[in-house]
Amino acid sequence: MKNVWAGLRGSRGERHPRQAIGPDGPRPASDPAPGQVTGPASSLHMLSYGQYQLGYESYGSGDRVLVWLHGLLMDANLSRHLARILAARGNRVVLLDLLGHGRSDKPRHAGPHRMDLYADQVLCLLDELGVDQVVLGGVSLGTNVSLLTAVRAPDRVRGLVLEMPVLEWAVPAAALVFLPLLFEVHYGRTVLRAVSWAASRLPSSGIGPLDSFVSAAASGPDEIAAVLHGVLIGPIAPTIEQRQAISAPTLVLGHGIDLIHSFADARRLARQLPDARLIRTRTFAELWVRPARLVTEISAFLDRVWADSPPSQLGAEPA
Image 1 (cartoon, rainbow, N blue to C red):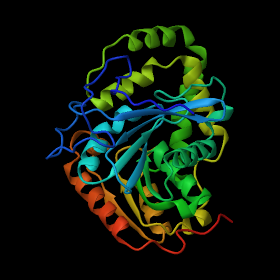
Image 2: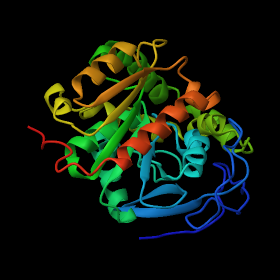
Image 3: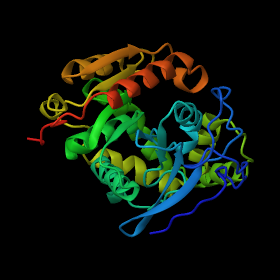
């Protein structure tokens, strides 16, 4: 096991200021400006997961832990702004790079990238953090992994914040997008290696979502192909019956713009979960570029979840 306390580095080697927010650092008096990854640094860590190393970042301190997961091929860059705001509001926010993403190891074969194994990585992180219960959340891939984790270990999930789920309604659209992309990555290696080489040499912009997209482009074609193949060969979400047994309070965020992240899926998920509330976002990028409204909703939800007495049972074991 390897832990590192350090200033936060950009995906392509740039060091950001070391001042705080770390677990013992001061919190800002007001929310940071949207979009920019400026000001305080986080604590940066690595943990062992079998033969691999996973990277994660921690913002804030205390027992109110939110573990937030990125979307497919993205990384922690995507949500640093959200993490800083929620840390300033009394939460400890942990951003995990799943295997094949960000600073985590990137095996070049599909097996380790199954979504159910991503759920195992989340549980490995919770053991590393030494916490009994957390709120889990994420975007797209992160939402599906959060659901699988809640089914796997319901007693450890205090609540869920789920943005842009990818469920049954989205399967045809996902197949139309991901399968051609997988073929393109497989047969277009020469071009993609050139793109990867160029992206890996770009300086960090300090704009989290942009840096996350550039970091994805900097991955090698074999690494991208392994992730895309892996998420297609295992379960992508719990069954409907398993979802109906998740009793943890849940906030579902959905939009109606693209077919992969269908609002119909978000609405159905909110109806399937026993204690869920649905919010329709204005755009797919609202939480990244104009986060104030949604952050207020998420912050109030976290206050409610942690104020409630711990339920005797947060969910049933999967059937």
